Amino acid sequence: AEVGGRLLALRLEEGDRVVEGTPIGAVDTVPLILERRAVAARRAAGASRAREASSTIAALEVQQVIAERELSRTERLLRNAAATAQQGDRAEREVKVVKEQLAGARAARTSLVQELGALEAQVALIDDRLARSRVVSPLDGTVLARYVEPGEYVQPGQPLFKLASLDSLTFRAYVSGAQLASVRLGQQVTVRIDQADSIATLPGRVTWIASAAEFTPTPIQTREERADQVYAVKVAVSNSGGVLKIGMPGELVLAGDSQRE
Image (cartoon, rainbow, N blue to C red; front, side, top):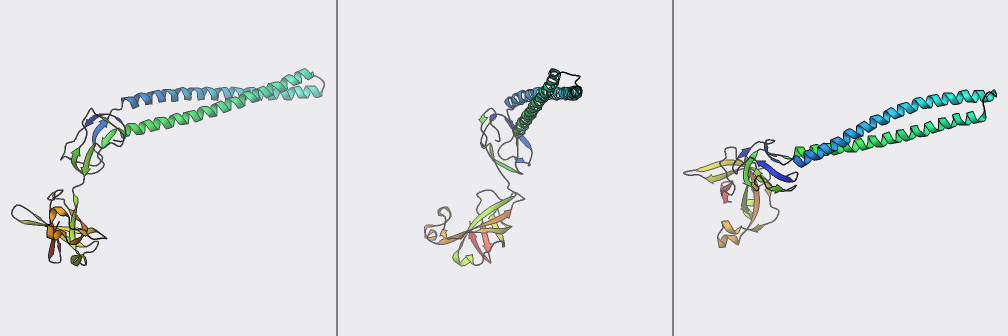
């Protein structure tokens, strides 16, 4: 789960094959939708205040032009002794007041624009969480296990189901020290498995070789054989036909010899 909440649906069962990107469930999104509406309303109100601030700035700019024109006219009259000092002070004060009002209005608009940016980010974050409320298959594969049921509350990061791509399986085998020399990374090998009345042969490729020896695993060898040390190897085997199953035993064939998994 990428978000927390009540699981509304989970449309899969163990053994189902799913395709990457297919919607298979959903987490309750009502709280997120309500939160988004509240933030969107605040965003709309902020945008309205920003438009009002722009209108106020435009009006103050006109007043500033008129006040500066009046100040220039009064200064000419003062030079010709056709106006009083009081008239000059008044004109100068009008210009300063309008400039201060204009600076305040511009600062307020800047603050509103920043607030709108924060609200836009909140809306985008909620939209992302809404998108993550849909449960989609992360890959093409088969459902191995299902951990939750609709109606349960889930937390972010909680496993909902176990999915694996069974088109290619990793076959783990153990080779003796004498056989190790005939194994190399990338080597094409053969894996054999038992069927009803025959032995199936599948191609594989060595993808990993242990760097240290270990005792033969207890479940698959006798007490005497467990005293021998072996090296673990991993082989990628194509399973496009679905013949291989998880946990199935088999044999790794090496230059005419075989080693049971």
